[in-house]
Image 1: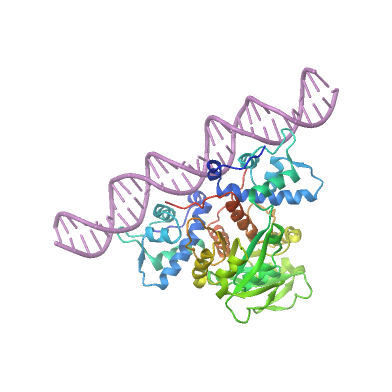
Image 2: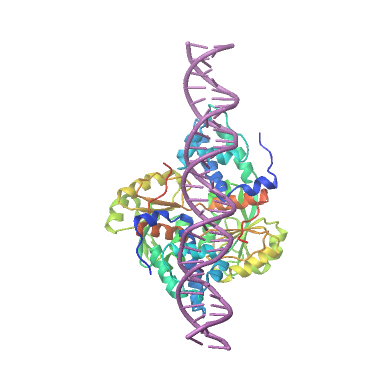
Length: 222
Length: 222
DNA sequence: ATCTTCTTGTGAAGCATTTCACATAGGTTC
DNA sequence: GAACCTATGTGAAATGCTTCACAAGAAGAT
């Protein structure tokens, strides 16, 4: 049992549930290597420090994937989550900004593994334009709109300084791209139908700092 | 008015509030450059796509920083948030794994800006050990526990493959480090008094993927 | 075939977070 | 110095998310 979601249902699904789906996917991928045929919500929960009820509830939003008394079939569930997350296909990704972070991302294996293929690189630095990174030639940022369109890019990763990010994003939007992963430390303005996710690495360190200074206990399920 | 928090209060503060504090801090840092002397909760909210009530509530957990009818003094509030987050000081950070991501982080300016100083690098690759990255000599991972202690490292960043991360973390814990920022895609096991934050870049892409496939509308305050 | 055991799927309860709404107070103007 | 304007600070309401608790279903044992 597993239908495509209607608009009603989709909007009810919280961000946290989606993020946990990613965790389940990862955990199941690990288990697949093992001899495990099935996995219970209890085991799955333990490996990601969640509660079994949470796992079952999350999955139940999308269908009934388990067998009572037995648990969930590992490979099947993994595939179904992949389908729900939309990572059962290849996404064409462009990366803007081939600096420190940009270069690291080009070689980041987790992206490829999950179907996110960086097929295009952009920079404004003449010394970088034309150079080859992992088989991809760096394009001139001037041709951004045209090249994003011509190459049917679906997702753009922004890895440039905050000062220029908004200008570039305006062009990215012009090119019709609907999804942006932003590493620049600022809040991008985009139209309502464009999805933006921010990756703010300093923020996580700040959380650690807060936790230590205030002796904030890590939250854990009982 | 601004007291140090007692245990009662601290535990009531949610993770989301802390994360937003980081956002406020960043927004205020921007405003400081401008001619702005004060900022209202409304303006602050707008720049981070939140509601004014949220901003006021978040701040109110820590004290009364504003002036009715006027707003918040930009520089003062920025400093107070820095104090709350514990980034009004320098943190000694070690980075394990000088690969793609590790190298990028060594040069990441946002870390330095906020007081996170990477003062130590570790790797297990003989070709990297002894080499110089931005003035820091890469140490042998074998000496991890001793060197973390000797250098009074407070935060460790894990940027190694998932397969070896847990072993290293066990040593990091042995060395008495209480805060870990983890880039490896797995859930680390640590004692209750050790803080771990996970930075999972693929997860954000998965969210974008889900949003596009399911036409999930971005959530925005009205 | 029935009984036992195990674990799912899910309403309902409990808890947490966000938003509302307004009393309150500082600043400004006349 | 009174009246007006503006924006904070905060209980209370509303919303959202997590956990509980149990009926129900499936497999294996007797």
